[in-house]
Image (cartoon, rainbow, N blue to C red):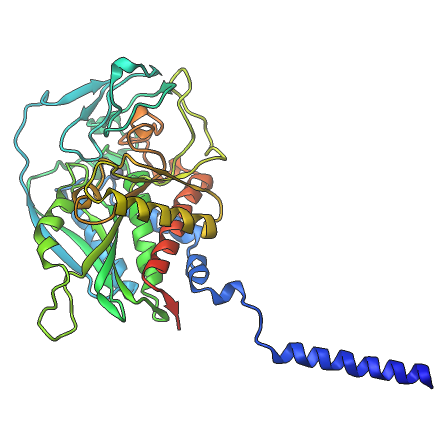
Length: 424
Ligand SMILES: [Zn+2]
């Protein structure tokens, strides 16, 4: 009897504790974190498919039909994502005529056009050990100690062995009007402030520009897709922009800064609640996101596979007027990567150069994301496909594409936090 009563009392106790637990609010789950949910909407196969879509336009060299067709395609994709206010800005590209030897360095059949501060401003050098006599690496960085590989721009279409691709890339560039496309996610409570997320869509080298810069363009496009989902709200605005003419000296980004810097934060028309150019809070550029196989070996060749310790290099310009603000933004990306990226860490450096964030760097926090440091590593030949006929979709493996996906996770998580993203 006594025993039975005890059992009965225990049963009541157990039942009440179960009820009590059921009546409480559930413990926070990963799914309740909007940043994690948004990062989870990035997908390796989708990222690869967007890069593949860009490669159908060959190297997308500025001032060609294939470049204009790529811009049209990107605009159609942004619209299909529901990204509001898809727009273009136009500018004139009129380079000074120059002789074939002006500023050019011949490297084993390839020509490095070292001018203008674009991505094509390459470091000269054959394979071998970097020495102090070689001075600064391409792009203003300290030359990496150790072995280096050749760098340069392929300017010979006949070095492209794929005949179909060679024909696609054959049309030369013509000076004249240019345009570039962007779309904007409008903030709900601070529509007058925005972060700019960029990548350049033009390329060089008579290949497919898969890594330079299909990989960065696709990050911007995938972020535009995810933030444009009807259930996503952000307090601040986000502009997704695909720069043109990066390779010729950042001309598209410079045109944007020249045309729009003075328009920041102005309501137009007055009282409309519309801000054609929200005030810039930060500019985050993505360029060459796939390949981090390490340092060239003594013979100038590189390991076949992505190195397991590959990283996403976030750089700011330590000598810019906004160095402190830019550095703070870089560390925010580092923190976002620590928490939300799945595979590869962020390394922060202070020598951002040769990228579309440069025209912004004295006005607003400006950073770049890359597969490697632009000056010391890319400039020392760590990417043998850079501006070469081998920059093809088929060159890269899933381990390479995954580095780009981790960069996307990093920027997406940071921007979601910085703009107060929420899911309805
Ligand atoms: Zn590039």
